[in-house]
Image (cartoon, rainbow, N blue to C red; front, side, top):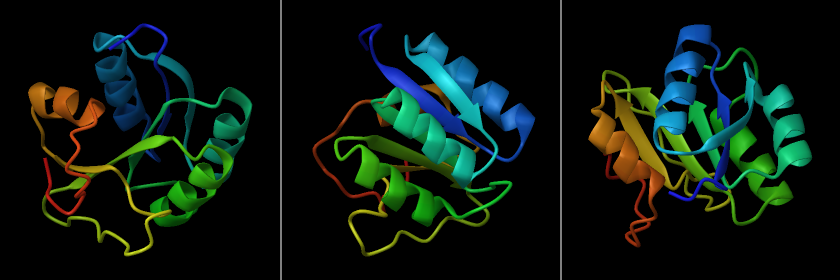
Amino acid sequence: MASTSSAVVVAGDEETRVLLRGLLRLHHFRVDGEAEGATQAIELVRMHRPSLLVIDTSLAEGSSNGLIGHARGLSPGLRVILVGPASHPPAVPSDPMQRPDVVLLRPFRIRQFADALVPSGSGDPTKPR
């Protein structure tokens, strides 16, 4: 990844944000901001226009689907990775504006995270990585 790639991390849990931030930095992403919920995340997307939005399904407020739709309205080329537990995989909406590019189920391997950062061309987020 180019060092100019930027990201915003959204998770209700601080430890999850720290983990995702660390993984992004490991893969040479600049993390422009972190949010606990959808409202704060939208402000960060509006302000920074990141190339990537990494969202955990557990948010302090708002829904991941609503957040994805709103963020894509602000930044149409935004790539979205949705992280959720394998024990309760997130439903993938039919609306393309609310659909993540990748659904990554926890626990995941670092290689799976790295693969999720790169567009694959398959475009099918219903196939967990």
